[in-house]
Length: 116
Picture: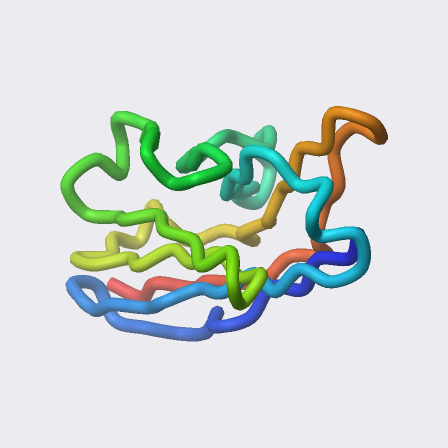
């Protein structure tokens, strides 16, 4: 499984961005997917989770009400809609895919910078 994130960039506080994670390879093996982020000098943290069929989602308290995770299994793509961005959302955002047989896969990340 290969994962490629896109959609990061520089945005002013209060703005929006939509991240995408395109999966390729053995995509039928992918179960749940998640977005993580890592800010400079901090540990990687879970931002949002979505189940295989999209009927279950979870969010970090810090992004609830502002971020929305979704996926399109027909397109093998996961999304993260980020609204009302804050400077503290600045981080590298990583896509994660869980596979029952082979464990977790990670993308290389996309940088989101929110200016105040």
